[in-house]
Length: 250
Image (cartoon, rainbow, N blue to C red):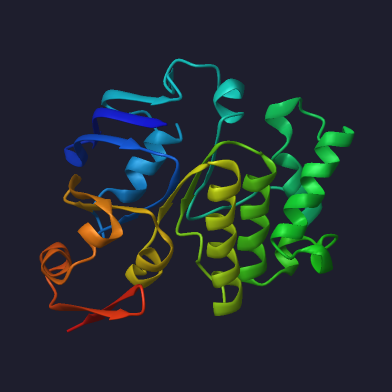
């Protein structure tokens, strides 16, 4: 369980996250909202990439601000929206970095098993020996997701993980996340702009605006025409296609 209690984050005079309290349960949660809503800032605070100005965040009862980094990294992995490396790595070497919280070498038999599993999950066998700067944007994105999966945590945070992915790989990734949630009872939190993908794959939706959570609940409670229209200041219509909700804008 991820517990967020009265979290505030200020960037100078800008209030990016405004008194957010949430419990994020096992399953797939999508954070949606317009640009500047505070989605990525909140995710970064949970993942301890930035320090909250006020409030507390706990992962399975461990305070992310005081618990040793390696201990947190064994429970939670985070993938930022923009990933840049100053060194030249192959795909396999990058994925192996995900094993460092578990000992540092990345070369034990169990580490190798998890690395191979992550490479297989993200369909990277054909490019495993290539350097990241030789890959397409989508291949690089999948390599970074594989690194996060190799970390083998119960909590996974992903900021816009579908960036640069074609439809086949986007569907494969979201299907994988759903499967891992069910198989391992993981808590996966995904920031995304594609409301239809969120509606199709998420269990819960967190809707943010102006740094605040305005709605939080099951897909059926949040993905409604009135709530989406108010959230984005844009007319919205929600149609039903079988058991799926499809959002049409304008």
